[in-house]
Image 1 (cartoon, one colour):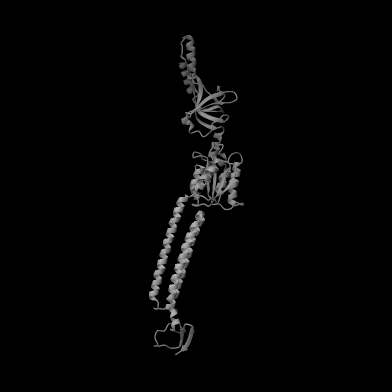
Image 2 (cartoon, rainbow, N blue to C red):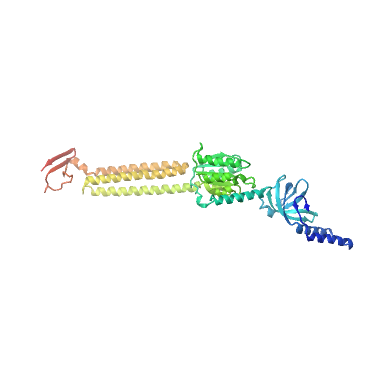
Length: 441
């Protein structure tokens, strides 16, 4: 027997029992109240029909302040009153509206106050969603078997991305939410938008083409990170992110990919393949952008550590200069001078390159803090001036200056300084301030 044009119904024993009761009533007259009759009919429907899936088009849709939803399901020849209570409505992802073709699951019963049978709905999905879900699960199993979801192939996101590729619709709310949070947390970060359709037939090909365009450069330039995003919707609205062409484009991307599609409860195939799944566009921006305040604090701490390192280096140089001053005139003066000069050159190189390398690194990460470089440059200029002063003091203590006062240094042919006349033989070299004189004993 076909009832209401929506679902097959097999009548069972309770129906026969009801028929017998009616026949008995003809033989033995009895009077039922309306409530009693309605109750019997409700019991019969709930027992004989029970829970079913019904397909039809929504009409006369109403949402009450209580959170309950009332509507009618209809097709070309019949209609069915439906109610979706607030508790069950929270788990329904489909946005109900007049004219929407849906499949509803619930229990057939009777609203006794009006003597009207109705469907108490527990689940609603867009018509055809069951087939889409099956297609989703099949592709998910296929790609999982190929290893596209493996955690080992997931790449970490760059901690301080400077240039982000954004693939989304330029007119949707998702792009506004994403950029508002991103630039609030890290002003100045560059975003390259690749506009695509994010819904409807063919959108998946546009999304895959955008991923490949960023991978190949194609006039876009290098980016540190890619973000796919759009707002929430039904399974049909988000379906383009469940297509295999998008999944494989994400998998072959040389750049890490963040997928931020839908709401927290929405999952797509792209979520499983991407290097990171963000529950919403705003959450994606929170995960990508560093906190500018924390970065500024870290930079200030680094500058303080660099200043302390410079001061320690200056103190060490001062101590070595003092030691050189005390030991000048002893040992081999020329060798000691050269060693001190080499040591000073090395220290100068260390002081010149080490801070410059560190500053270059932070300049690349945080271009908005360039003004801090001027402060460091002034510190280095002062350091070089102090170092020049120390070098001048060391030059004053140079033993070669003694030659200018009329003294000489005499060595043998091998360059060994002679400190006694005893045992001296062969060629001698006597060094004056203005030259050398060779002699022989």
